[in-house]
Amino acid sequence: QVHLVESGGGLVQPGGSLRLSCAASTSLFSGNTMGWYRQAPGKQRELVAAITSGGNTNYANSVKGRFTISRDNAKGTLYLQMNSLKPEDTAVYYCNLLALVIKGGADWGQGTQVTVSS
Image 1 (cartoon, rainbow, N blue to C red):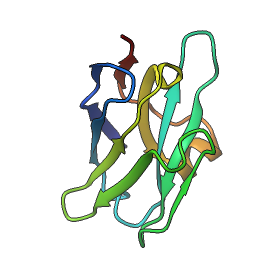
Image 2 (tube, helix red, strand yellow; image 1 turned 180 degrees about the horizontal axis):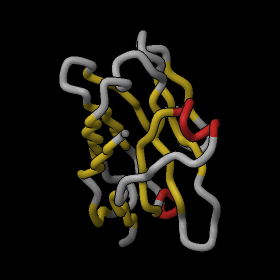
Image 3 (cartoon, rainbow, N blue to C red; image 1 turned 60 degrees about the vertical axis):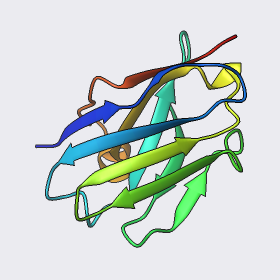
């Protein structure tokens, strides 16, 4: 069973920064590719960044150059540094194991709300 707790969201002005954290209570964390997802109102959840167990990263075009995903396998924690935030980044952000999401039926945490507004 995977237990994920996201934190670090909030209200920020355009151009601002936030750092999200995801604490994963699972032995699966260190050996699996992890991802940050987001879901805006009325839209489907989308993958914005992923990181392999070895640290290789990949980003959605919409966040490339602005967001940085990282992980601490010893702590079982995933991070997302978000810079130059835009109003279109407003969403609830979630983390999860990519393999579980692709397989279907993944459990999701409560997410953390990010609102970018002046």
